[in-house]
Amino acid sequence: MTDSIILSSGSLRCEIKPGLGGCIAGLWLGDTPVLRSTPAAQLVTARQAGSYPLVPYSNRIGHATLKWQGTSHPLVQNNAPEPHAIHGLGWQRPWQVLDQNEGLLMLACEHRADASWPFAFDASQTFRLNGNQLELTLSMTNQASTPAPAGLGWHPYFVKRSRSHVMFEATGRWEMSDEKLPTHREPSRGLRQDCASLDVDHCFEGWSGVVHLRDEALSTRISSNLNRLVVFTNATRDFVAIEPVSHVNNAINLLEGSALQAEELGIRVLAPGESMSAQMSIQVEHI
Image (cartoon, rainbow, N blue to C red; front, side):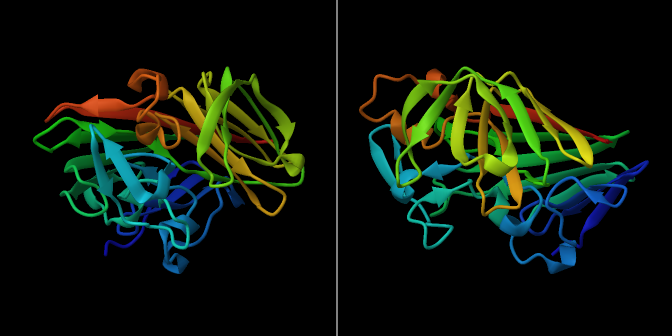
């Protein structure tokens, strides 16, 4: 397993562990953690990390069964005891280093069809530090012989401090069942709220592409070319998960028996050899 790699730019420092799901162990501005940050040597799973990639789908696929073009594909329940498949498989696979220097790292991961996902694909990640900004790119290419559903995103956990305040604009929000699966869409203008009182685990649609997170230590701007955003926190959590994603939770299965179209749910269908890509950036300053 590849050891951790540290990128730096001025006072911004990012530690990445390619062999553990291509995850970000930590991101710091000086001595102040931006993401929930743990020394890479102490990480056992990417789920403990500061951020990890979501590929080839984000969030949950209900009851670990992919329903696609009239066929049900059983998937691995990869976050027991939860009954669903969750967050794709990139976070559970080792990534290989393609290129690196002081402020840049490129990783790759190859998947061949198995019980976790029935379609082969290749994925790549790029991490670049530029001043006080971390720039991320995530891409995947369908290597299956048939068209395949695809989705991308990131799962960063931002530190929740005593005066953390989150603000972003959106047009809708998917309500959730007790099984943590989406049921229906309601109008929403996004969030403008102190995180201490926030109890949310939802996918927002029509996201403007920018989130402002501010507390007593840092001012953080999260931006992406994706237009959906999953936000998760509650009073028991010391983080705010702010996740740019390409599609609605459980989107592929929502197509079954629904009048909704793939484009409305954000599902991309990649032809053999076709690729998709997404960008995200985290820009941070001391208060």
